[in-house]
Length: 151
Image (cartoon, rainbow, N blue to C red; front, side):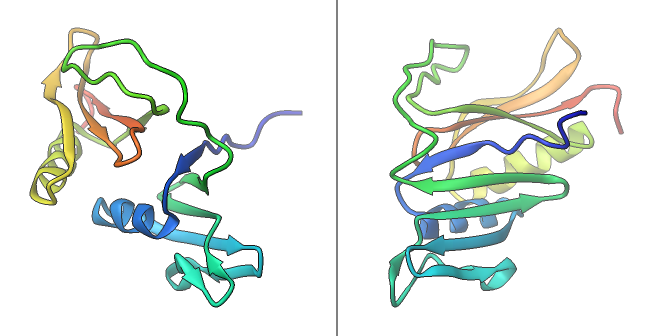
């Protein structure tokens, strides 16, 4: 017996807006659902249909999946402590492990170009990783990292 994977659930204010935010960073839509049922899979997943806005959905990148829940699961109600970069937030913290430090820098450049909130710049840390911190519009924080020895 063993766990096959872990999928976080983030509480968001809009599935459609979150789809757009993640897509700007290279993620793909996984699915979306509302009380009328499945709205769509993959690129056809929509933020809303004739039954209303999506209440649940997912985004995918490589082997990673994040579930998005509008106004339900994945609360944003826990105050996090302050860390370097003054990035205290009410959101969930997650780590995105990239293939190389160059990928960290590329994603940082995309985030800055798109006007996203970077709370901590790309930094080579003493524990052997290069990382930056990126804030989702609903306050969730992503530590985007790669090992310094990985190319």
